Amino acid sequence: MSENLTYYSSSEKNLIFQILDIIRALPERHVVYGTISSLLCIAGVWIYRHCSSRLKTVIIQTVSWLVIVNEIFFQISLFYYGIWDTKNSLPLEMCYISALLIPVYSYHRELRSLKSWLFFAGFGGSFFAFLNTNLSELDMVYMSVHYFFAHGLVIFVMLIIVIDGFRPTWFDYFKTVMHTTLLVCVITSINYFLDSNYMFTRAKPPGTTFAELMPGWPYYFLMMLLIGLMFYTALMLVKLIPVNLYNAHSAQK
Image (cartoon, rainbow, N blue to C red; front, side):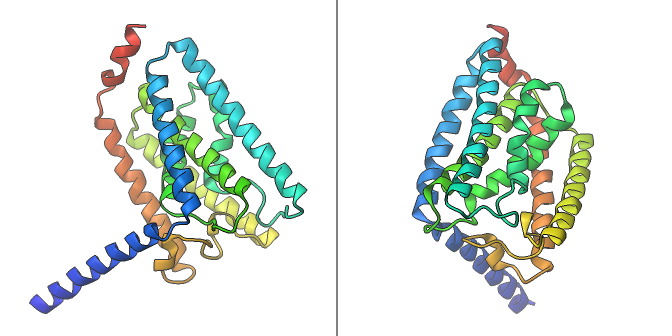
């Protein structure tokens, strides 16, 4: 019995060390850009929290334009360098889809389903994009800029949604799970017709990712979905944060 406990304890430790090895192996550019993005995000959230309602609207609209400009510049760059391809150039990853929903959110901030998506799916995907990456040190700089702009802005919007009083309910949770499932089905169909691998439904992502620690298809993808579901569940803890914790300052404006 004690031998079995020792074995499982050792396996758990090995897995933890393997995860840490993946993080330590991240490209230097990823670490630098990720640090800069994190600091800008924190600064932006602090500024947003101390702004008036009018300035908050301006900030959200500005972020929306940054998302659009970022994606347009990225697509133009791909065309310019002659590497645009329907198999890997379309914004059909969950995080990029979430980023492109920010302009919609800026004009429909009352839509709870949109807030729920950005809170669960947008933040979940973008958070893990900072911990691992499908890019390499050899990729062109504009790819990293596009990567961190999109993911960083999604995280920023999720945080300001919480600051503005959003607290998830179990209805929000299950509705987002349903929307995520629907998106996976749609993207899987698109991948079949385009022979692509958006959202990594057909093959493990390249680069330095946690998928390296997982078995082959389809098990790695099922494990990714399970991890995503667990992360969604963990985010429900945000509902325990008192709404008036952030609204007290706003009421003084």
